Every structure is written in structure tokens, then in C-alpha cells.
Length: 309
Length: 309
Image (cartoon, rainbow over all chains, first blue to last red; front, side, top):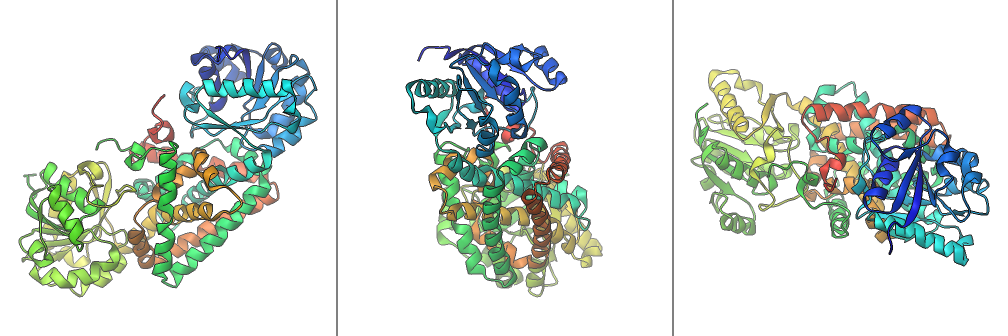
């Protein structure tokens, strides 16, 4: 395909994902220019300092000339934000987002989306535990999946062309694109992302509150497994609050299943049922290997972080 | 101190930890020679092939001339093993182990330990998700803690000298040694290692069993957080069965607290209590930073495994 994919992309929200998109769009030639807006004046100032693109103080000015507008804020504010700038978007432009939940975002935004633009919700399955405009980097989306959840109204030619344009944008910055419906997205992500984060936040909180174990001991001896959980439990609190509030049903369903399974393990430990524990633990290696084979994790010991081998 | 710390070390069990100890003892000069034994003839043959040390087909022959004997088997077989070889150990030699639980091991082994040797249980807080004699490497214990839990009978001069000798052995291969009592060890490890592994095994099992989500989707989109859990859920099933069976009380206590906390988060999600979720999630970043400051984890994004930055 010809580069740049689009002349101008506008990114609303300059955190880890937004700033990574700004860097990637320019580095890989996905967009000719990058417009940026953030609700925080401090963040806008920082984005100007580190030269992420054309930073605007007004969100409507930011989106006015953009071919693609990407919402990269916590999902809780997306609906209200769209109301403030959607009418300023030019005809045939694409409005998309990077939110970790889709149905709630679509429901909240849809009534504000004017007919002259294409609304194609999206979600790159990529990130780190860091936050803010300095945390981003251009290669964040390489070899990762990006899920797009277009509404069925896109079935016309202009809609299909817009979907192709947005897919090309993600492809150029290194991602593979998969199209699916919002319900499937929210169910899959509940188990692959939302529940793991909830569990990680929870176990780190449990350790934090333990009055019968010295806090220093928890830190010192964290290499026994605990430290793995602290990474994702260091993720942005506002982002994750909004995820759980906006994907409540799927998260509660997965959590119910998790709790049932955990109760069975708990019972096996209490009654000394070794064979049941062993056979349960045997099954889980296969999933790890499949993830490595699919290029979604490293096979290096300890994720390769102890590199003195 | 003078190297080697001891003339000869014997290692019983040639898996990840045993084979790492064999490599480390020679590479860093902790022992003049390394004797090895494993219950599996295949593992012994492999250890000979890759030249890990002097491999014996009889466990008593293996320990006979050793100054330090290290048990590196799953904890469930340690008690019975000690009975078979303890009388063959030479006077003033040290018997230690690397088991992840201490009280049950001590109770099982203690009656078989003859008076002429020093029994000093131990536990290096180090490992990877890999198993077997090929998985080990010499630097595994560097910058990690090793906990020793000597019985109070070591208070005499010979006992103190033995404790010093064993501490020197671990120090030379790169570890920091901390002495504590068995009860404290088992409680601390229940939260820093045993519960995290149980939770990881459980969530990977829950994902494995989900009939409402495509298995391929779980693999593809695992970079959203799930993949972190699959690493420790790929650890050795027999080792972990034995850990849970032998540290039942502490694990069940920590699991009870974890469940209480999780029920509170579940309730907050169900009732949309955003402020409670946010404030809970805010607390956990501090623990992550402390672990990084203590040198027990890397500060690199995603543990540094996505190294294309």
C-alpha cells in the first residue's frame, strides 16, 4: 500500500497508548502528520516538549482536518468527549478508539456520532504497566493483535473502504487486524485481560494488608512468584476502574468461574487430594506453549528478565 | 573467604535447582567437586552426558565423601530419601535442602538425621518455569535470597561453624543469606510464592475450560495480561503438588484472605462503586516500586521481554 496511509491522524488522550500511536504513526509512515489533544494542560505541555506532534488546546481544532480520529482516553469519558468534537470532524473521516471494552463505549458514543463519519471501534492488545506521554514507544504495537468491531452499517462501499483504511493504518505500525463483534470482544478480553488484572490487583492488595507477615519480607522474597503479579497491578488505576465498571457482566461471569475452580483447588488442598492437584497442574503447560508458538510471549526463562545466564 | 568453601558437595535430585547448583558450585568455586544422584536413570544418564559432575547410581555412594549434601527433590519424597542415606554421611557434614516448604520437611526428615551431622534446612528464592537437568544455569542464584532455617540445637560451636560454612557456600554462588525460623518461612512463602502459583494455575485452568470463548482467542489475545500468569503456571506439577500438600495451613490462611478481598472487589464491580475500585488499585504501585528498588525485579516495560523499543 502507499504511504502514508492517511494524511493526518488526530489522537485524543496522550498517555501510554496515545503517545505510542503518535510515535508509531510517524516512524512507520502511517500518517503524514499527527494532531494531539489531552484534557490535562500539563500533559499537553509535556507532549509539546517531547515533540510528539501538533498539540492543540481545543479538541475540535485537533480533529478538524484529521482523516482518522483515535480516542485514547479511559473508556469512562469517551462518550461525553465524542459529543464535544464529533460535529467538527470532516466528511468521510474515521472515528475509532483503543478502549479495552467495546459494548459500553459503542453504546455511549453512538448517539453522538453524525452520519457523515465512519465509527469503527478498536482495541490494540498491547501495553505496558507504565502510564503517561513519556511511557510510549513506537514499536508497542508490533506483532500484537488489533481488534476492530465495526457496526453492521459499514456494509456499504464507503464503509468498507473506511475499514480497509483503518486496517492499513494498524498494519503499517506492525499489528495484525482481526474483526469481530463487540460481544465476542468483551467476553474474550474479560478472560485474557480484565480478570488477570483484577486478580493481580487483588493479590498485591492482600499482601499489602497482611499484618502477620513483615512487608519487607514480601518485597525481599518476591522472586518466588509474587513479583510477576505486581507488574500488571502497577497499571493505571483510572483506566482499570473504567474497564471493570464498563464490562461488568463479562467480568463477573469469568470471576464466577474462577471462584468455582479456586474453591475446588482449595478443597483438594484441605483434604490432601494430591492426584487431583497434580492432574490440574499438568494441563496448564500446553496453553503456555501455544502462546509462545503464536509469538505472543518469549520462551526465555523468567521472561528473559534475569539475563545473566 | 578461601575457595573452594568445601571439598565436595553432593546434590540429590538433578532438576532445575539441582543442576543449577552443580553448575554454580563449580563455576564460582564453591565446591572442589560435585557428586550427583537422581532417582531416575534417564536423568542420571543425561547428567552424565552434559557433564554436570560425578553421577552415582547409588545415593549412599553419592553422599559418602561430601561435606555438604543438598536435597533438591520435590519435598514429598525428602523424608523417605533421608532415611536411605543419612547414616552414610561422614561426621560433621551438613545436610540441607532447597524445598519450598520447611516445617513439613523438617518434621519428616528430623527423626532420620543422625547425631554426627548438622541438619540445616534451606530455601533459595530463585527459579524459572522450566524443569529438568537441561534447564539449570550457574547464575540462577545471583542477587537472590537464600533462607536458612537451622534448628536451635545448632547453638554450639560446631553447629555455628557449620552454619557459617553453608552460608559461605550460598554467598559464593551469589546469594544473600537470611536465617529465620521455619514457621515464619512458611508463612512468608505462602504469600510471596505459594498463593501466586495457586492463583496462576487456577486462572489458566479456568481459561482452558471456558466453552464460551474460543481457545484460539485466549492464545491470540493473551498479551492483554493473561500471558504473565501462564509462565508460573508452567512450573513443575509434582513440585507444586507437594508444596500445597505440605504447607496446607499457611496456604489456606492466605487463600482465605485473598478470597475475602476478592469478594469485596466483586461486590464493588457489581454495584458500580468506582471510587472504591480506584482507591484499591492506587495502593498497589508502591509495592512494585519497592521490589524494583530492592533489586528483585527489572523496571523494564513488560519485564523487558518486548525488546524492540
